[in-house]
Image 1: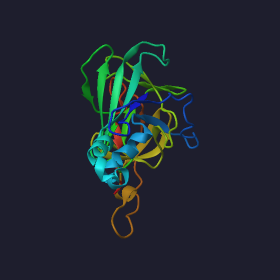
Image 2: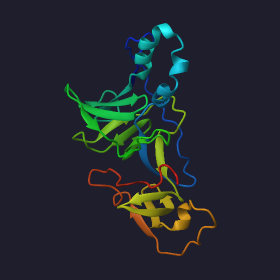
Image 3: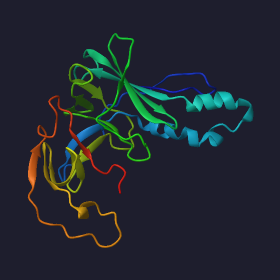
Image 4: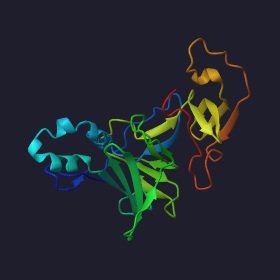
Length: 248
């Protein structure tokens, strides 16, 4: 992964970050979780998004305001290489360019290997308001150490992405018992999470009570078990998402 940010003084520069040697210990499996999405942004990019609100602190010298503003309001770009296998010697399929634009949020483009043109890319799980989450994650279908296998689309084949070094926050988002998801436009409470399946029941008002007063009692109702295959499209992308990304 390469993180490209403007250098001090206004000139663009490149900071090369070493790829992680080991994935962080994530999601202890007691109780079990359904591991679902991997973050595409770098942690430093989230702090960069706040530059618009910190210009007085970042640019205290009136004589250099123009250059300083241009420097700190330029996008910070992470270039993430996608490989055909979980090894840096594998064939390169292309790159993901993830941009953190102060005041505007995260965005991404895909560039196929050997191509000059880039195409806009929207992850499976995204929320433009970075004050929550942040959410800019892609479904992964396999993991080998620090490597994450991503399903095809928009790239023509499944690819492997190397995780980040030095994450303070977990790179992986999992689904756990008690979570509420949105599937086919309806809310479902996760009764139990397994590594490759979710046990669900229809959402009830008490599951996410945001009103004053006592919530109504939970009504006993039937549950259904959905396998990972049933919760994914033909390529392997998950077709559900957390229902309340912003809470109430």
